[in-house]
Image 1 (spheres, rainbow, N blue to C red):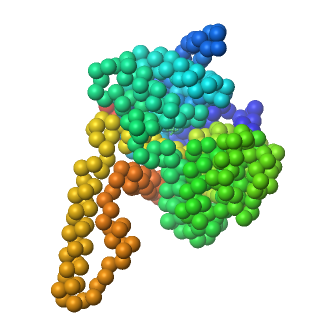
Image 2: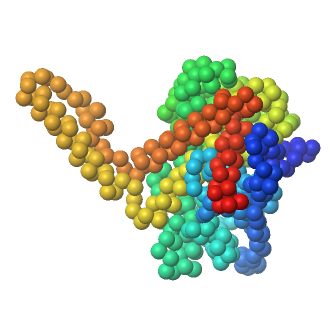
Length: 477
Ligand code: GLU
């Protein structure tokens, strides 16, 4: 269920959230307006000859803010894509990038297409044609506009886009940096696919490091043992659920998908559900757990943590009042409407907002972009040097123990971990973890440091808008 008819559009909803924050800030009306508006939206309609006839597709690339360049944001493939949505998502990218300190402006793209309707080779033709239209206008460019995956797209589409750019810019040595989210063999980076889900996990871990914040939800203790309902078992929802279950001791008691939902108080097997969906197209008939046809109703199910990881507008004025979860973490972009947010806030629910919660994707995209521009894999120079230093220390300690007859022994587990230098994946995780912790703390300072800020979302907007404003001011605006 999306936003109700009497609610503002997605873009207006983002605008209202922006306004709520700006009212608490000291910005000149001119600067406020400059930051708020979407700089440009390019609409393209192009034809592709498919199955013996010409099919016309409509696509968009919105640039919300160029206070930093390149601008950054994914490309979404869905039949529901439209200009208002793309502009809302582009605005969220601006604030998200500012909040997690990735040096980008905000952008977003979308193509009205149902990817499940086309064969792989057809999707390649469509993607290359769309990319061609954007590349020739510098709307895909390593220094100006760098897309990434979003709903309905992934590594495969990003590889096609990168290749299309390289074909059209044969002497650009930085061509690979024109898009992120590429597969590792095509210039991608380890850990990008799961980055958004990993970011959700790190965000929750950071939240639970602050017992005072946890207390506001009415929950106690750490993440372990918490019950979780996740909406959407796509790339983000799947990885978030899997990591929380496998590594943090959470129990996934509900999974909501397009065709219904599954519940099991004892915990659902996330991988088994994912495999079932891949083979059967939905959750219906899954042998473990109870099937509910009205999937959206499970958003209102009792649980500790609710993770909407699918579409925008799913929690709105029509159902916000009945949400029972103590803590909501927005893994999708815009899953709670402005009206829904008001209701939840007044009920005292704690919401970890999208611009923070799902920033893991763009954070690792940033690492990938830097990797492409530096033309070297992270860790390649220092990994073995790091190992050699650690070995020196271990050998010295062991020698000392033998010489002095101290009988010290270092456990094999310690030695293995201590002697392993950081490879690219370890460095990506470290950078992501650091980013999520730092960004949470910057939001938290505003949340608790100011009497007039009631919630994390407003705090996030204030931190982000303040950073964007500073950049504009130093440009002389
Ligand atoms: N589409 C993702 C998002 O909404 C990733 C964007 C990127 O990596 O540029 O944040």
